[in-house]
Amino acid sequence: MTIDIIDLTQEEYSDLNAVQLAMVRTAQTKKDGILAEADERTDEVFRMLVSNNAVRSSAYAYEKERIAAEAQSKVETVKQDLLYQLAYEGLQSDGNDKGPYRYPENPNYNLTPSQRFLVVRNYYMEIEEDPGVRLQAYAMDTLARSYLGEYYQTLYELLASYVSE
Image 1 (spheres, rainbow, N blue to C red):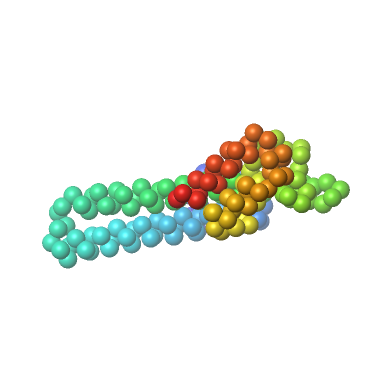
Image 2: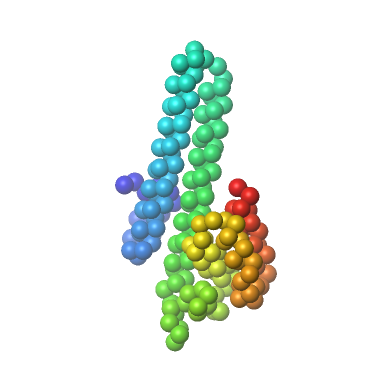
């Protein structure tokens, strides 16, 4: 498998632990699937235009460009999610006398606000598939308000953006 979802040097790649490697491979598989689906959709459009004797029209170029842009957007989402997951995985390796750090059971108050944002974001992305339910659960989370501080609203807006998609 060729890994091109994120740019890693050989040294950076060898520094990844088993969980991080699995995350990278899963993201790469998702990317490959998205691109294969886009290619298939482009081929379907071409076949449809050929069957209607309209292959020379500009519709094919426009549709091909639209499909490619849509696929690139999905790939970028997978890539950003992978980067968040890798950052979060690095944060999870420590713990205290109460056990490993895990939001909300044992939040790590030694993290920077941006690192806390990643921890809480990943927690909510994992617990619920439905964006509306995820947003509602986050809105009722009183620990997140104090734990995230000024980043609470930022994460709320991010989770709300998934609802409108």
